[in-house]
Length: 99
Image 1 (spheres, one colour):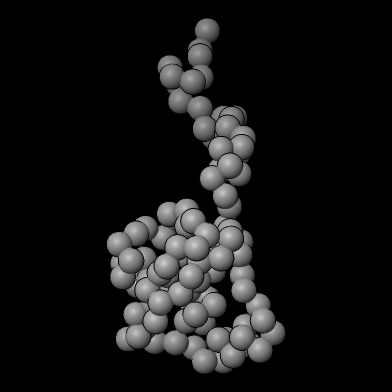
Image 2: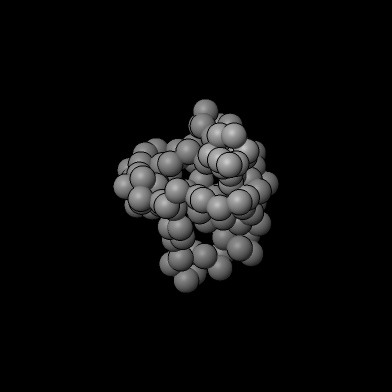
């Protein structure tokens, strides 16, 4: 099956909407030569392999309620994320200076 990515949809959104199982995102990513963390552009065509096992209960729930999840971020939002700081992110001699 070939589908079109909606605005702000991630591979996880696509997976739950079309297979009913978020773990199938790995199969979808492999079928499309991408990583599960790739940002998807709206309008991109993706292939959902027919042999992927689907959960019809979840698919029917989303379809009957016209739910089309779009939890991804845009490239602009990715660039606006704050830089992580603090002790958990510092390296002695690199970002943490001992005097």
